Image 1 (spheres, helix red, strand yellow):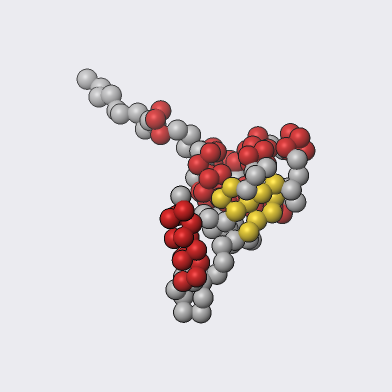
Image 2 (cartoon, helix red, strand yellow):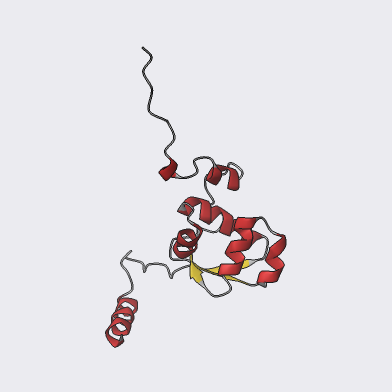
Amino acid sequence: MIERREPWFDDAAGPLVRPYAVTRGRTSDVRHGLDIITLVVAVRSASEARLLEPEYGEIVRMCQSALSVAEVSAKLRLPLVVTKILIGDLINDGYLIFRSPPPLNRTGAPDINLLQAVLNGIRKL
């Protein structure tokens, strides 16, 4: 009697090859040093994005107001590394601009003034 093997693909796992195909095989993007809290915003209108590939167009449409790289990744339901590559392409092509978080001070510790401002803002909520 022949044993049936378990299927190697689980429907709940989602697409396995798609992110690799979307990035054309690239697995990292170091051009801009994007962080998960880097803010990106479109500098071109959503109508100009209609000629782009679907993922690129969607990023431009959703970034008409500033979003973090993590938010874009979550909304696209793509891995963070894939999203960083796509955003990097759009920055190079002039569709997006970005602003990285401020660097840490010389000691490597976060800026105490920035932390105090965040705390004050949370208290006001």
